Length: 97
Image (tube, rainbow, N blue to C red; front, side, top):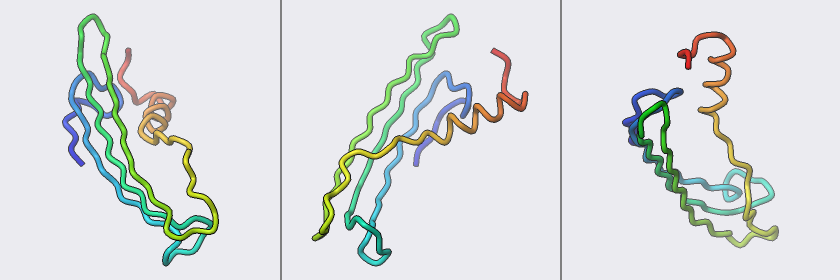
């Protein structure tokens, strides 16, 4: 993972690059048997006057491994980072806007 953001909750500039590898079903059991590789890039630009332009690219490749059940094409997106920032804001520890 590569992270050059200026702040995790109030990001104005920087980037994040990450990659992940997932395996399910082969030795762990479960309904699905697959391999999945995912890469993600986020870039933040401070364009002035309190405005930030954010871009995100996420690519992945998955393959079923002799599964009897179809490979799941869609999965819910989870953004833990945004949830953590919202919790911090609710506790009054976030930077004022």
